Length: 258
Image 1 (cartoon, rainbow, N blue to C red):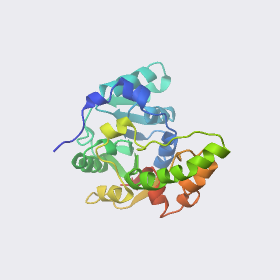
Image 2 (image 1 turned 120 degrees about the horizontal axis):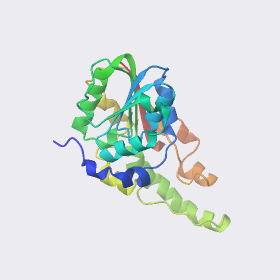
Image 3 (image 1 turned 30 degrees about the vertical axis):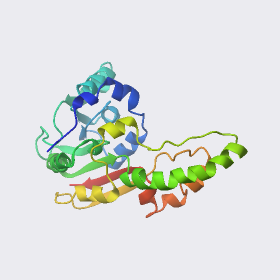
Image 4 (image 1 turned 60 degrees about the horizontal axis):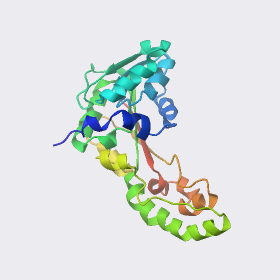
């Protein structure tokens, strides 16, 4: 069985050009409820945004990634900063963490699980439980929500686009397009384990984590700059209410405590 896709895909161009800037890192740190002097682990640390945020808060921050490019980018980003003393980097496997048990106050797994084959994903969750201290927190984020991409977007959002487009073009004098697939070319190449709310809950089955809170989130609505699109194509604000939100969210969060 496969455990992961080739690390060669996660090169400099991916991290610096294709990987979008994101505002979710602050939310992740808030979910972890961190305090000065704590120890955190960021699995699949990418460009190091979480590590830098935490290090600035005087939190001892370990980052692991299997991409040499990612680790080089982080080293370059922190080399002239005083907080670099709080950051330790390792190249290691997420499904076999090279850390003692009961070691970290929090573990972040952000936009990683969709890149890991299911068998390795289960092992990774179990390893996270092992390295967390009692009372330690896991914060997981994954995108996209498979239900949104496979059902809601093609069969509702895009069809509403075709209905609305003539009116928007004539009345607002705007020419707009929506792609056939909301995934990027990198998503199509690298995502081997996209999640839904239900599959994310199943990921935690037969692990020691008991109470897992799943949050559906939509960070950016397609064409939200045009209010008629936001209301009719994205069912806003109804799409902010559960269970409708389950189908209109494009981001899933999971939070749990050991």
